Length: 74
Image (cartoon, rainbow, N blue to C red; front, side):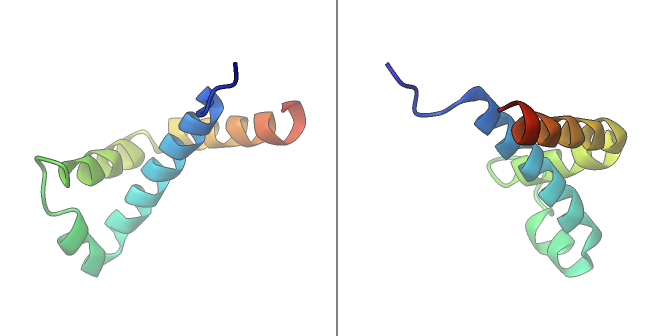
């Protein structure tokens, strides 16, 4: 039986989401529009941006290791 979603695909999506939100936090116009809410559904963007900025070294290492895994091992 095949799975529709793979675990490595979910990890790639999560890493890209965190990196994108951290980048959008640096853009002033988008920061006020997209990341202004800290609660609710829109708060997920804010929380991902905070994770990306506070843990930027760990996120970068995870991105590089995931790229290595997807290119060479999979």
